Structures are given as C-alpha cells and as structure tokens.
Length: 304
Image (spheres, helix red, strand yellow):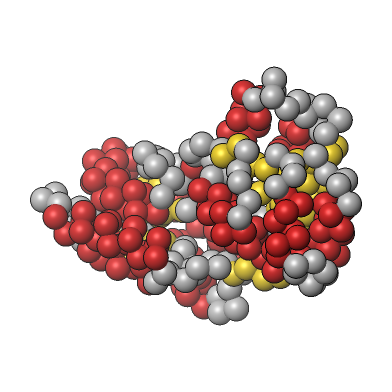
C-alpha cells in the first residue's frame, strides 16, 4: 500500500493544491465540508481548507487481512498448475497483497511467469501499476470510471479475441464481494473463482466518525464528499449504532453530496441519499475542485 506522501499521490496532491491556490473563485467560502477519507485524510483536509472550506474529516475505514488466506494460496497453486484461463485484478492494494501472500508458497518470479501465460484484466490504473511492478503485462485495462459495468463492457468488446464461455476466471476481490460482477461473468459463460485478499472494517478509533454523524444530524454539515461505497456503508452502520440513522438521513436532504463514480452513487441511493454531482474524473482532487466550483449554486438550489 502506498502512503499519502509517495510519488503518485504527492504529484496529484501538489497539482490540485496549486490549482486551488491559483483559482480566483471564492471556492467553498466557509462552507462546512465533510470527508470520510482514511488513508488520505490529511491530504483531503488540506485541500478543503485551501479551497476555503471548513474541513470535517472523519476516517471511516481501514483495510485488514482476511483471517484465512486459504483462497489466495489455493489460487496460487491452481494458477501454477495451469488451471486458470484468465485473471481479473480489481484493486492495486489487493494485487500487491495477493502477491505477498503467494510468496509464501511460490517465488514472485514464478507467480508472475504463470500470470504471463494467461490474459490478465485490470480494473483501472492502480492494478495496472501493481501488475507492472510484478512484470506482468495487462491484456485488458478497464477505462474510466472503472466500474464493474465498464469491466464487463471491455470484455464484451474483445469477445472475438477471447470469449468467456467455459473459461476458468480468477477474480481478485476487494473488501466485499460484487455479486453483480460475478453474475455478469457467469452469464457470459465464465467459471468464476473468487480470490478475496482483504476486507474493510470501521476505523479502530470511531470517535471522529461519531462526532461527524452528530454534526450531520444537527444540520452542521453543508457538503459531504464520498470517494468509495464503503464510506457510505460504515457511516450508516455507525449512525444506526448511535440511534441517529434516521436523523442523519433526513439531514442529507439539505447537504450537497459529491460522489466519485457510479458504484459510490449506487451505494448512496440504496440509503435514500441522492448524489448531487459526480466529478468529471474519478479522482479525489477533481472531486474537491469541482465541489468548490459548484457548491454555492447547487446548495442554494437544493435548499430552496
């Protein structure tokens, strides 16, 4: 896993901060901005403040290894035995974690060599980068916004090259299983083997998240920015434990909601929270930048 100070993140952060500092608009103009970022919490807080907002940053999740990695090790053995026809990697963090687990039974070079013998699908730039580190070429790179629907479409577009019918497909999962993606692959004839690597849990310290929920329920949040569906799930879970779920959901009727991508937006709608906009690119910096531009007009419209 990369920390917030490493290469790519540092470059993106510097770019977005420079953009914020050069803007002539008033940005958030003192609005209270909620972010549930965890790994990049400090970066998000700085971005919001640079755009003139009052940041309310409450980490909402942490990645933890599965108690048993039997599936990962079984995948490695089956891959080495030539029992898979395709591998799909959904996240960069998961790809690297899987590689670390596989090293318990096979050298990294042997694992990479086995992957090079079959088509490899990567859902977006992060797994592409992780696979490049392993020396594994990507056969299909799923374009933005990198949803499970985009993944299926990318495979459909290449159906003439490699049909999924009767293909044995390994699917590296992230946090929780995606039944829609699995069903879509199986409907195309694939025989899917799930390879879960890590799962999501609430943060060890839920104090900031609980404080943020209280602010939402009291109407003390103007804009909420969501970057992943797990943030939505954990926010609602903790709110329910506090007995504030209904109050928080009602308050969202007066909160401007920004959402990165269709997957996050779908999760919000499942709880009756209507996303007001998605950024032009599924990146944290674009989310903050465009929220600052749109917030005054969209919030005024929503509250009237």
